Image (tube, one colour):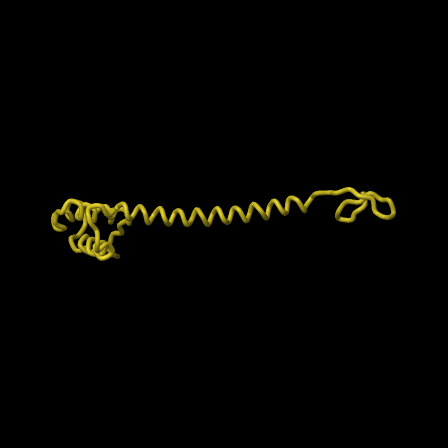
Length: 119
């Protein structure tokens, strides 16, 4: 069995922000948050590689993580809206064509519905 723990993206981002924003060494922060130094070091290195120009006014890892999560949620919501719009159109088309009887007289003067059945 594996002793590996899984950490959420938000937890990783917050851990990296503690290191980046405080300037404290990884060796000091890692035991405080219950993470192995090497793991935290990997997270920090990855974040720094993704953000080479990170400065004081750039968004930190937590803001970046939240931004990415919101982008993903926005994409999913757009798909849902598009799907629901299509479903709504299909159901309204079906409602207008099914079960609607229009009375008219046929040539032999029998009252029939739009489906051609006599009443």
